[in-house]
Length: 392
Picture 1 (tube, rainbow, N blue to C red):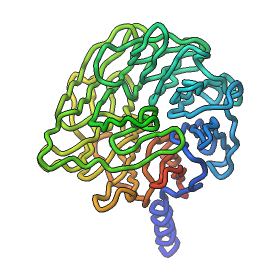
Picture 2: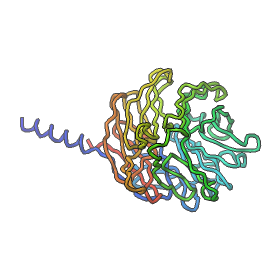
Picture 3: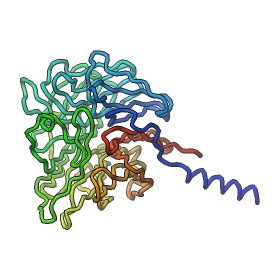
Picture 4: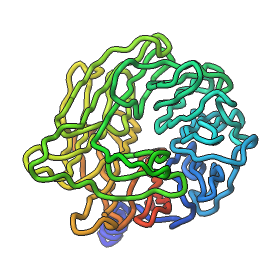
């Protein structure tokens, strides 16, 4: 009986000792994305203050990092990164003044830039690596043939060549989740912005309503509308892309309702979850939600509502298990927030698993139920990296 009770106590302690821990704080100026291919092996993408491309590789769960960089470019500011396998992956970038629009790898070690000389400017905040051949970049671009590109670019040869597909909506394409080159969902969103005539503001990229990528750091400033301000200026849509990105079908259209969409994660063509954030229409306070569908967005429900929150990232391992992340915003000061990690074990209900002070969760990679990783930013614009590892 004593041994049984002791084993039970040790089991309970082991279960509840699982937590998110910051592995490396302020390890890079901007490292906003992560993708792991095994419990301790993965990649982190970003760019330094001097616009040096960062493609960190680790086999020690982030304890040790090796910058693989981009083999054919000394410049780079990567916004998103996904691996289809231990050898094949793609990264999307913020490209201007010679910065590459992205990078790809075919061996897991050497990364090469995409779109050599094709795009004048680009901002690919979302990417997806469907398989070793099919890679997707989601966002906006401008080149001599298309000065106002908005939608997806798809590669069918592992990232070597790309075809552009405008999705045909006035709303900015932000993130996507693809099941094949002929089937995928893209979320879009717009939110109120403040125009500026300064060069720094014009070349910056609004990651979210509260985070701005300036090229050299990430600036956090909580967006606080007037109490009497209507929820205009917000748009959130979800569209289905088929036929290699050539055909689009608008499925969800939420306009001027105070929200826009961030990341989306689909486990198949029917089951999807999408983060949304914006303002509560009744009190104009920041608010965040998780939207869900079980029939490919023919209908949907709201599984989670977070008062005062921001939800940026979500990664579903299966139809029943996944993580979502963002931050609880502090209304008393610009540079203060609580990073939030939400977990679901049934695909329906979400539990606030943990908070980490001043760690704005921006991207998640879930390997299995006992291993997950998060890239985030701090109030001073630098990056942090956190890991979740089961200890039992």
